[in-house]
Length: 62
Ligand SMILES: [Zn+2]
Image (cartoon, rainbow, N blue to C red; front, side):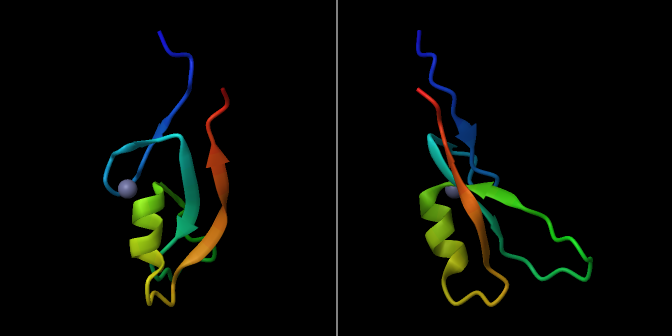
């Protein structure tokens, strides 16, 4: 049994041992929603996206 903790991407639901915390949508609220996404989605979401903000990297602890 693996004890490695993974999270799942908020966009594609893939499990990821390394995820990125990002904002990628326009928001009229003071605090926008943060999403945890896999590296693949992070690339896709950041591409030509003026609303993209990077909030840190989450890594699974082994
Ligand atoms: Zn994803």
